Image 1: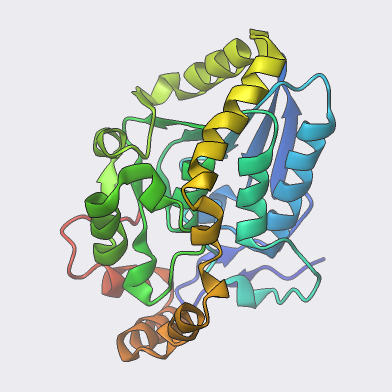
Image 2: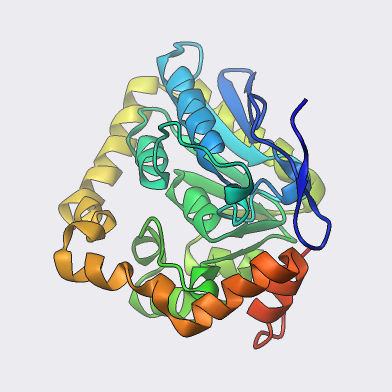
Length: 284
């Protein structure tokens, strides 16, 4: 029996397991569920492995013509798992970028259904999907800068434009679902109790359309962005000057102070410290 470990403030962190990502067959589509609801589906290496495998399974299944990606419980995902070190994992796994580029290059359209939080790399995960439907109570944002992290996948500038991208990435604020729609992070906003039905209706509609044309049109839209430098932007670490600066973000004194609070005081102490300058907290 695996020992359940806890944060300093007593929050249980479930160990990695084979059901951290679920795969369900729908009517012409596959539903992939991020399934660590007790910690708001925080993403770690095990989830990257399972999510990557689920996407490959959907791609190879001729009965699947669209993919619906969502989160179990009250949130899509709280982003990267800041407590992944409690269960060290040395096994190889796809990177965050590997998983998200697989969604980008998948021949079948992917719909993100977002409720609760979609922040940090989860905001990027929802953003790189072909469609994003959000519940009215959802909040999205690139909050990594609050604890000294750089964006794992630089999708936001391509979604929202220059000024809004700088506001999201440099300030680290979250936005509600309607503001996210205005900015271009979200296609549609629906009432909370209609989220699943709306996402499934879109998946079934996509599944009913001529599949060769659906795949062609996804490829053509993606190609327009790739010709504009999309892949080069995502591979920003290939630039030595950028990689050197990115490698020093963890050395920032304020970032180290906040992460020290996380490891010594626990999750809610970290959130309180991290969000002290913000009027609205991201904590549930």
